[in-house]
Image (cartoon, rainbow, N blue to C red; front, side, top):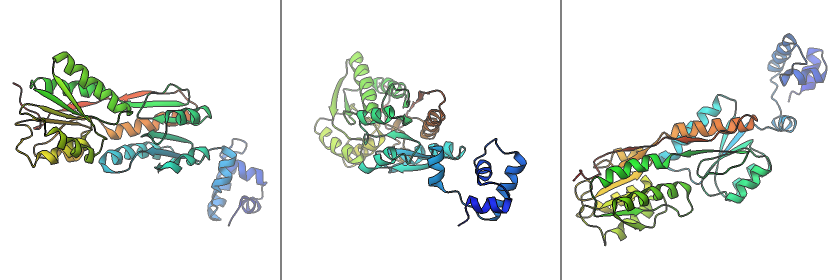
Amino acid sequence: MTGIKDIAKVAGVSISTVSYALNGSTKVTEKTRQRIMKIAEELNYIPNAAARTLKTRKTHIIGAFLGDYSGSFYGELLKGINHELSETGYELIVCNGPESHRLMTERIVDGGIILGHRFTQEQILGFADRGHPLTILDRNIDHPNISCVLLDNEMGMRQAMQTILATKPGCIHLVDGPEDNHDAFERRAVVLEQADLAGITVRKWEGGFTKRSGIRAASEILEELQDGDAIICLNDDMALGVYDVLQNTSFRIGLDVSLTGFDKLEVTNYTQPKIASVSYSKLDWGKSAARALLQLIDKRERTNAKIDSKFIVAGSVLQKK
């Protein structure tokens, strides 16, 4: 395998000159650098990544630490992250599981984008204290090495509640998300606040942001469901579970009861009727997260941001009374 000694020999220069040229140093002229780069290419020189990392203390790899990989939600998010990184020479590793933390501790990645509770608050702060740049997508943490790029859950959820309350539901059945989830907390708070102001009873049902949990909740809701009620799911996966259960009952979605979700997954456009949901750009969320992390890595400003959300009305909502 060709090394910098071989390049130096052919070029008739010192090893340090070759090193400066390969690393873009201003200690060599542009003419010399181009000549050395041409020789390196002719000799099929491949840089030693491990050695480069030791020298620069950078791997040019970003880790996306996610709670899951499945579904169109994560696909669009990762597409946005990768799109932004591709313009900067960084590579993306998608991580999941208890051992994924090692990518951070062993400094295999230059920084991390975190969505999901594989990392506790204490672990995140511990990594940040040790100088690891992080972008967090699912909770608000104030730290110089952490940027938070969060969804504006309140904006879309308020629009959804205005639409639902206009139908004057007898009861709102709220299919909840995980108790310790930031997004579920914000969405839940809006539903409870707006329903209380309108004097509408809310019945909470346990959910876990999965279709299976939506199916389980729907089976329990059926024991209390009445014509004119509204079922609000804090994400679309649960709404799809509720949808499947109601298809086998006498309750007609959009005619007898309302059903809404959050995330506006593509599949909700193909249900009959279409499921009303809160929409936002997962692609832009990924791009914003990557930009915020790169700014931290480059020792530039710390950027926090919010991604706009909007309620998309569809046939699954009852007409106004």
